[in-house]
Image (tube, rainbow, N blue to C red; front, side, top):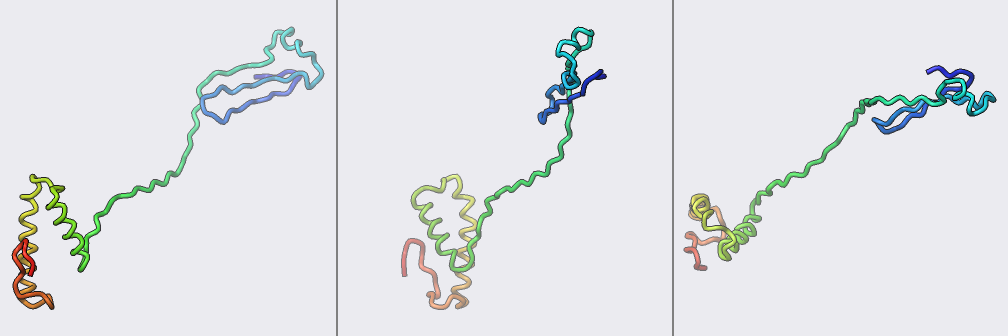
Length: 134
């Protein structure tokens, strides 16, 4: 756009897709405001076009994942007590019981072996039957 006898002003928007406006200011050189219209020139030219802006941003994403904490050593006592309580109160579904039977039998067999070898100081040579103390 040519600006005769004045200064060219560009207006920019920080938002993409908005129209850029160019205006010719002739009042700064002492011309009357209507002189541009009288001479057949447009005082303002509006250009309507899409504007594409490429922005590169670095995004840091933190994701929290629940990790099961496996008990060690004496921590098993609290875990097994909680497990027994859930079994007793029905908070473990009947449909899940067959999947638990094998691992529980393995754990009891391993405990029996340790007790018989004398690896568990202070425990009787035979574990009490379930439901009994002693």
